[in-house]
Length: 95
Image 1 (cartoon, rainbow, N blue to C red):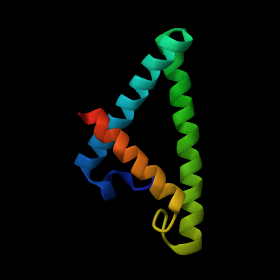
Image 2: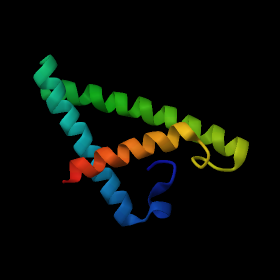
Image 3: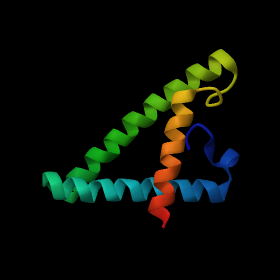
C-alpha cells in the first residue's frame, strides 16, 4: 500500500487492502490473546508494531529492487511468492 500509494492503486483497491490489513490484525490479536493472554489493547499494539516492522522490510526490498532494475516487485520471487500466499489468505478471510 505504501509503495504504490492510493493514487496508483485507486481508491477502491486501497480501501479493500486497508480493510483486509485491519481484519488480519484483529484476527491475529484475538488468536494471540486467547493463546497468550494479556489485554487486547496490548496484544494489538504488539501486532501493529510487528506489521510496521515487516512493512519496513518490504519497503527496503522494494527500494533496492527499484534501484537495481527499475521494478519494485516484478522479478522478485520472494515478494511474488509472499503476495500469492497473502492473496490466498485474503480470499479465505473474505469468505
